[in-house]
Image (cartoon, rainbow, N blue to C red):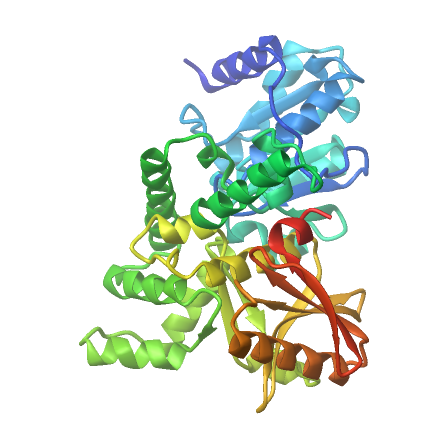
Length: 428
């Protein structure tokens, strides 16, 4: 079948299909900004479903045929960069009376087509301002693409489900005054901190959920890293990923990993390991957190902590930390703060440490400690000490300690400390 004819079939099949049955996410990208809306994030985190919801909203206002949706991970697509115009030709031949400037174009995983950005830029400049794209890798974040689409795009980072979304997807009612509802919420929190929150995983039996997550990891390892970045030293890459993911919530030392590899007889340059760390962040397998410092240079070059993009992804691989639910809890808090687009840092002095400094519009709005349990007096004293020092340093009168289940409110050294379980903090 000729490519244009195949495109017509794919487009028409979409128009004749039933509307999408999807649950809305908390993040709702705008539809009529006249900017290119770009959704970026790890594979399988729900970007396509967000597109589906946006399309459902549009269908309430316009004819479905005025929406073009294409998923470039469809194995039937074998377009070269110089053949992308066939998409517009096929669409115009199907609907010759339409003004393309009034139509909406949704392109899912478009980074699979080489030089896609030139096509999108031409479309935006000459055909339609209603363009929406998703992608899972660094090509949507590189300086080259940022330059190419400068002034034309609004970027939205998409993560796996938040806990609030997790409850919604499982149809769990949120009522903290109902014993029944609270029991369901606490049970869901335990599952959330063990299995993570990739949307597809929620309704799978645990054995199949683990297999699915392992498949996600393998795709990220072999396709998104080794294949995309032409990494031939896969032995070093696997070792590096093991160290990165097993170090979730901890400081990451490239120098230490380099020495470990060297002592194991694995040859690799230290600069290559720094590149690996950049690649891992580019594909959203893990993200880093800078240590707070008044010096911008020290922030950029100083010690960093590493956090996994999904707790379940860790626990389904050999890099488990489900035995330490405190780490899972801290990782979940980090991801929630990232979802809410706060600027965050960790704080450390010679005397104490605080897990998160939270900045909102360049002003510090909260300091947060995360601990599984406050019943141990030594743990309680350590967490409070770090929180108070951070509060006093930034002239704050209050701080927050997030726990698994403990809830309280107290005042220490003039600082009001709110102790709140994760399931409440992440919802309210």
